[in-house]
Image (cartoon, rainbow, N blue to C red; front, side):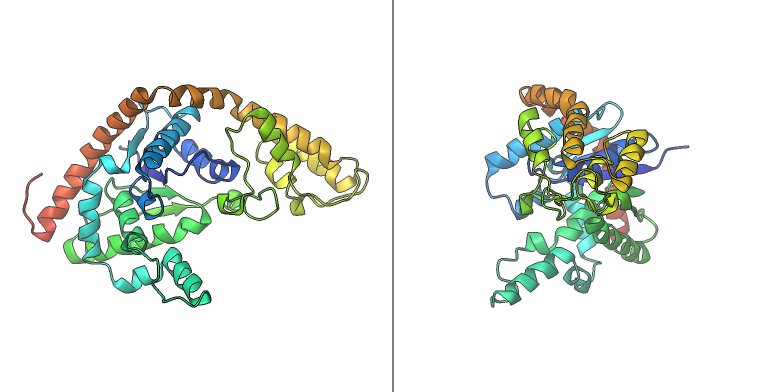
Length: 334
């Protein structure tokens, strides 16, 4: 029996931070043990914000190198560029023809843009491109083109998977059971990774710890994690501590339990936990950083891996798109 398919996509927007790793990269890599895994670099999605071709190309290579450095085996999983799979874009048009405009009106990113314009006294759609507005349609095509059953996402992306499920249902109601409705997988324990200042770790807040930062820089960032002024001997609530809520994702369960107990009873200082976290991050990412640097210096190898992935996903996408063409009546043969 064929295994189910898991799909994950990420925009090429530079080196990832701990929040990206815990919320997306690590869960996605773990899914490869039980699913046929598809990992794509969403370079066309990035056109909504990136206006420099050289930067987009460079960032695409960076994301490919990240996946491989973190342990993705391109012979066992499928790594590809979104732009290498033209079937995605044809499917997006077919999906758009059955998708109510009202659904896209409810997309979080579009609503956020409208709210920002209203607050600034601008016209509602000022600065809103059709790429931003149609973003959910393209994402739906990404997911549906390869028949993905599950999509691991952060909590802020759950809506896109739910919208894809709706879009697949509308298409299937019109043309028959052709598309596979997907399910979102959201890990609540990594839904909100705190940044240096206690807010959600995000590049837009400038509070991130890059996973491939040099060791000295990474340690300096760890030492900047905001904590309160309680001395080591005073009991602390680990659940309310930014530092502990990063530390617990990298230490072994026994060490996490020990440090939690010392928090609760008193007898541990934040400096000690920060030093240990810096050590754990170097243990986790030091070897991967070396692989990442080597991969970035060998872009032909990255091109080869991406091309092989595109061939594999297109072998799945072409038959699916042919079924769509036959159903809607365009009749053209791929």
